[in-house]
Image (cartoon, rainbow, N blue to C red; front, side):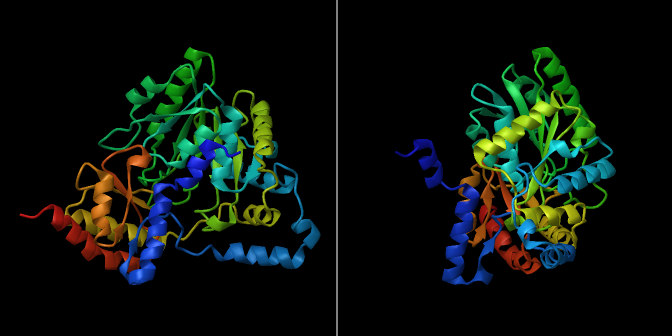
Amino acid sequence: MIAKDMLALGKKSSVIREIFEYARVRRGEIGEENVFDFSLGNPSIPAPAVVGETMQKLIAECDPVSLHGYTSAPGDQGVRQKLAENIVARFGVEAYPNLIYMTCGAAASLTITLRALTGPGDEVLLLAPFFPEYRVFTANSGATPVVVPCDPDTLDVDFAALSAAITSKTRAVIVNSPNNPSGAVFSEETIRGLADLLTAKSAEYGEPIVIIADEPYRELVYGDVKVPYIPAYYDNTVVCYSYSKSLSIPGERIGYIFVSPKMAQAGDVFAAVCGAGRSLGYVCAPNLLQQTVAACDGTPPDLTAYDRNRKLLYGSLTEMGYEAVEPQGAFYLFMKALEPDASAFCERAKKHELLLVPSDSFGVTGYVRIAYCVSYEQIERSLPAFRALYEEYNKG
């Protein structure tokens, strides 16, 4: 009567969600100001004013039956046209509306894309560190997730390990830059290296290997850091985009899939995307949100608060003696645990009311993820706890 694999999945929350729920209970016990919850990547800055203004204008001026009605299954044609034009203008690559599929956020984009491209017997390469749900999304398509270890010193792509992991069964590689959990951004050199390797391996095995570019953090970068747009470097690319982070609207669940027109059999790939969306029930993303993001696409987020948090947290922790990867994007700090067992380290951190996420589910051992999309005041209040935790490990 019940699918056993789904029952097991439903009874076991992700580590991140388990910590988030623990924080909710703990706040009720000792007060919100005494719990330092760094678990969830939930944007803490408001959406740009234009988002709310656009929604209000649409509701006030548009025909309500049309605005709240169904669009075509892949999305409103005018919205897809606008987004295609924006991709051309912003990134200088070809893009067409008939190769864009509107979705309910990045999770739907990834799930649809994996179902469209892979099945039983196929393998999908996950470049560590990676978002833990990639495993779930890949398994849902019937494919096998294969973890590719990163360079331990830089957390960049280990090309020797990646080359060794590619087989005749490899159908896709998920690339997430800016990265969750590390905050790292792949350089142009890295992306070119990926493109060259996958081009050679595709020729060797006689089957295109697709890059699935997961890009919810594209606009969240600091200083002069640039995020290479992968379709400009590699033809066989599908972009999975979400506005959750760039426009601070994670609860609205809106994004899109973009199939590069240069990829092999692009039309059939898009048809498979449409078929996967249909089979999974992911059709006709909310029309109000489609119209909103079409008007707001490319609006730059105000990263002042995140950057201030980033500098305070990274500067303070490294001054104390912690080792961490300096984040170039997103809103995560990836810090080395003070013992090999990251989960044990996180349990000891709980005694100081520090709620951190161990790195094991991200495909890397010995690190913790700290989401600094919180108030500046929380970070300030947490610093004595971080210092006490460090001193606990470094007595004498």
